[in-house]
Length: 385
Ligand SMILES: *[C@@H]1O[C@H](CO)[C@@H](O)[C@H](O)[C@H]1NC(C)=O
Image 1 (spheres, rainbow, N blue to C red):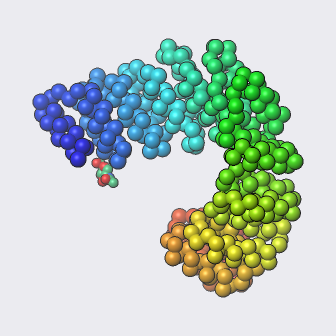
Image 2: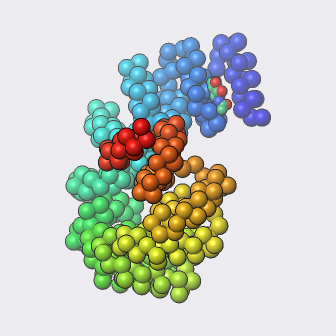
């Protein structure tokens, strides 16, 4: 209703030729929450050039685009606005930088934005540094993150737990546990107490760094602090152990977790099934898959794929078909991995026509086969022809 009211007032105002900046700004915000294209239409329909580069209105539309993950078009529009005379403020930059977290090409865009700041006279504040650090951490740029931390210190900003958390996260990519330990010491020395996110991130660093004894100790610490009430930290450690070829140790974490009655959505089972498959223990993987199927009625695609994979190895055609039926019933659309697992299975079972149909199905859904599979596929086509 409110949106309709806004529209009416917008149209009404238009006829009188005086729409205020705040009307445009709130209209764009409200409309944009539901429909970005419509919000863009409103923005582009602004007749007055000086209103179009008003910083409040610009911030509203840029924020709409960012919230919808359209960073690229957002940056393009921002560049156009600047050419038209926009004087961006600290909100503009914070909005754009926030959009750079966890999108492809977020990092170079963020660095470009930060590079512009000296020309605008805008000083980076703690919030902005926090966002930039998160962008660095999201792709493991630890050296750049360190540089920003140094700058913060030199400029006299006080570091909070989020700044440290991002830096720590950037160390998790390479498992740089030495730097991580130094950071924890420094943080504690200024009186900051690591929270659940940080402790879990530290666990990620240790696992990635292959420090499994330390990881187990830290997991116990998480437990005593009440930070291990769900399966996540257990899953991380199990996955790390299994990838390092330590299946039995992974299983002991799994059993331990089950024994403690830790809340689980089935990811721990899924990781254990993958671990068993990785060690070619297909019968056990198959058994655990059957267990999981009965325990967890609503599995997500990752779990379904893991089970499907186990069944393809040892469960037999019946289980594979049951799994495919289940996906169909739950209206889960298969992804690249699902198709890949099935095609490989059908080829191995010499069910070439099924493999061929699955490939067609896969292509119709817009997935392409990778090179390794393509060679096998080619062989299938030759057999078919
Ligand atoms: C969003 O707005 C555009 C442009 O006004 C319109 O064409 C489209 O149908 C709208 N989409 C939805 C989901 O309402």
